[in-house]
Length: 308
Ligand SMILES: *Cc1c(COP(=O)(O)O)cnc(C)c1O
Image (cartoon, rainbow, N blue to C red; front, side, top):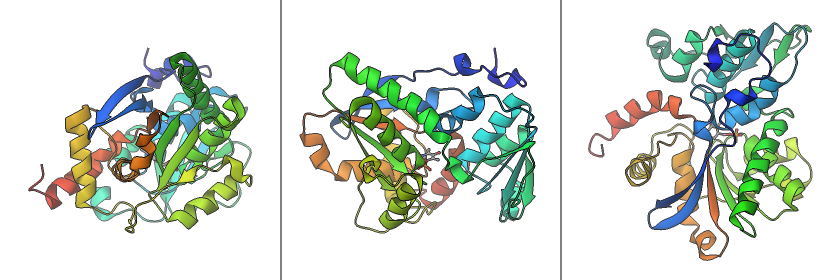
């Protein structure tokens, strides 16, 4: 049965492929494990599926409309369009502006969301909403995200125990830091802090990410460890090093990663060789976002013709 065809259904959990598989992976001579959250469902996957899991599986009495805001190419926007379609909600999405090129040539997440019935509004989201409307913060940066990340932590913890590992080093790249923070917090509760979450800021700098963590949770015990490269990095800018590592990942692992977060994630992880010199296995979290490559990949291909 197709998840998208079930209007207004509530218990959709069995349609998501959970737990997502964990597979051994070898890259650049390093051995690690990959948690494949991009395989949860063709249209609802990655960390957005984890963050919005709560909204998929709980009753929302009287809700008819979902509102959110952010960029016109975001992975969150696309996942919310799927969520709204499944739940039979109207979906109104606010953007500050819409690039003319994108408006005239819809592609990637933007195109997918329009096909799912998203109504795009230019401007700021409303300050107050009525009780038929549900507002989800930009990128799912909100308390309800914790629910789905507890499910993820549970899956990881059950796998760790089954494998007989003492602890794990978990790595994922961050935007708002919501995924990394709630994952560390849930693991602390489940396994008394045996496993540590490491992350790197892709959107802002270290100070921005720390501020995000603090906003979501004051207790610094639950804050993931932040790793970074020395060079400054601008989100969504085209870097040759990012494209190179993305191509290498494809060649060596056969897995398609996202082009916005994962290249910096992998570069940062590989640069911290000390993480590989302990007995603790490393688990990389694939957070989905592959549909967004439809807009990023042609830009990379045009800019670095020599590489592809
Ligand atoms: C949204 C997203 C992130 C960032 O997640 P946060 O919870 O905001 O840190 C990372 N990777 C991918 C592929 C994403 O779609």
